[in-house]
Length: 485
Image (tube, rainbow, N blue to C red; front, side, top):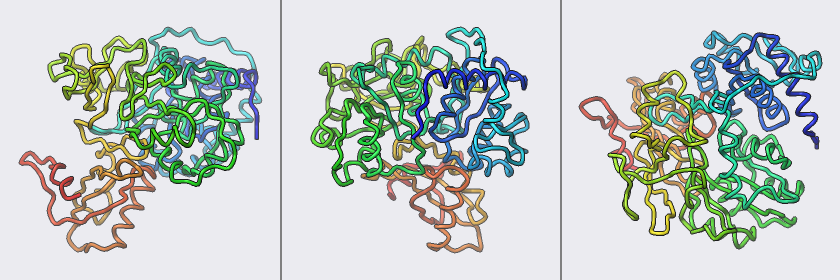
């Protein structure tokens, strides 16, 4: 176990800021971070913000195409990674022409310099660049629900804007003895903005552990061993904990927040019975995160509901014309600007940014209702996003990958209901002439996607069909595919 102090974070981030500045990285430049949970992630983010540059977090489970797309689209000049990340670079380095240099926390390698040696040579004092609340600081890519993934550009205000949304579901963090952990990758908005950065702001210790995949028994053991008091755990992970043997070691949790998909009343009740606490559900999305939440400590908690608007956010369910729906009336969940956690824009996509709004309402693409008491309930989506294991997955990126397989002529993916993961990705495939359906081919197609995109995006089911249902304008009729199940 390694303990890292604030003074160590300060010195290391100063050194990194100096090293980046020496390479010409300046205000507004994008610096990519491809690392698992660990001190280097925190150091990198702090240094980038001090420099006035823009942090571009990338998830370790991304495959070649996902990394390549984001590096190219963002124009990232620098990448900080480890040996695992370096192994993916040779095949995609030429696709990211703006990428000038790579630093590895695991030491020097072909095409990468030694991150730690570089820090050791740099000066330990750095005067942060003056930045304003609306200056860009962070870019997190969406899951690509309505086309290719888009870079949601956030301002420096996004951290302070998140604090009420952290305090509410975590029942007035910080309290004496609080200690935070999440299994969520710190590259995601949930892991970064719902756990790591707010905890650092409050002086709450953060537990970091490298996870290849979520292990419920290991999670229980970690929380007991590290005396975790506060956790952000997505609903799917909670359902996996629910299925695991009851922990023998004492769990000292004071608060659990959960979001990314619907929690469900059964998991809500399990939390009370097994963990001895009420799980506080919350809601947001990459573009405007953590705007609705529950807080059992002050009586805002209802099974099956996401909660109420967090102080500082104007959230409503609206009609297509932007007017507010009445209680019980189905509509689209939306957040009104200006809002302290709302994104600045989609990187390089002004049309997509404009289309995100109806007047001053930022639309979410999520359908919901409110009740007479003001609770929000998530109902469904008005786009084709798939929610699986807490991840929001868009079909476009997966389908683009599928049709690159030499046997695939046409492909479409849907979300199939699943009791554990909420939904699984299911692919419908029309094969090219000369290829016959088989279990071996299905497995090969699954592996093709898993290695090129992400482990959470590959289709867990593959169905071979003779003809794709399509409209006269060439759009897949997903409704018909969903009916097939």
